[in-house]
Figure 1: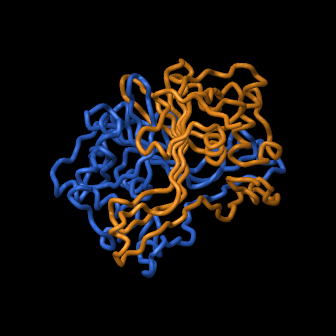
Figure 2: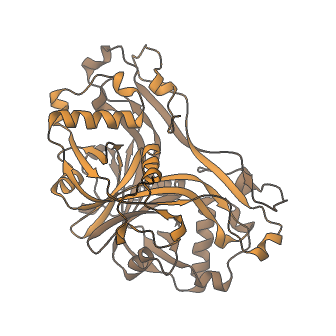
Figure 3: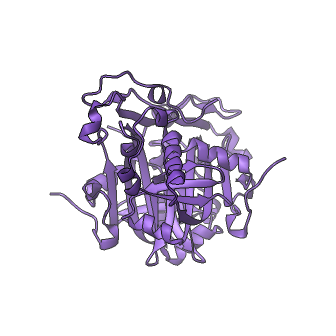
Length: 218
Length: 218
């Protein structure tokens, strides 16, 4: 059985409809592979898009920040927001300038946030954010103190009205351009980790969460 | 002489002020290294953040899309928008869950767009977008026909009210946590190209724009 998020009119991809979907599996996979999204909200009539870490829980996205931040206060107030996660898979080189493109997968979640006030729920959401950025890390570190929990606002955004847009594959040159002596194809791109840089006064071995860091686990 | 973009109240970083700047050189460098940004705009009271390619021209950002797209029509109409480019430089692993962070550089441009109707100006903006995604590519390809130019709307957004936020360096653990036997440090991340995948019926060599593709040129 294929499960779908709500395909409302505003959560429907209209340009290149064939690239759009509201399928839950596709959207969840994008949210799980990314770890930085952009939150769009408007304040005083001006929209903003601000990068944020996040985690995906059971049907919800978790965001966090300072209780003093304008963004956090606006979202906590319940204004409409949009959270977008975009993965860049490659550059599409066509024979014509016009048909150049990007292979990408993006997920767009619309809704309103709520603050998480319950101590245990908040603790778990923060643990999920650490786990989402680096799997296994939450078991390696010192967890948050009461003061640290108080200094962090945690927001939940229900994943309900959601869509994805996905482009894959080769360039779409016009038939007549195939004869041109111009290279065409794809250049795959991926986020790769470099060598870990230990902090001063750190004499323990590099742990699994760092050494085996990746975005997609088997 | 250090040049700055307009540091209006709403283009001022307020959380972690020490990470904020309106310095032109910093902002331009972020825009030049990135190639996909997120455009925030509101339609019927709902904000959206949509990924878009772009290029930086002389004091302007160029965006493009179908004249039929809602996003493009909204921006062409002159509604307030925000364009954000975020580069992820690494994950910051702290001894405490609380001090985990991301090293990143983001640039936020506020303003209103205008359509580029002049044929030569439009042609040049589109050339810059191709060049921005893959340097040297515009000389290798078939340029746009009149029909292709008509099927593309090009928008310009003045880079005036703009700010950047940058985090670099090691984790900021509390002094008392340094004694904990927990690894802390940074895991650098970078976008890396893989092996080019030639399109069907493409028998020419991989060109310089693909073979030497990178985000920062000397």
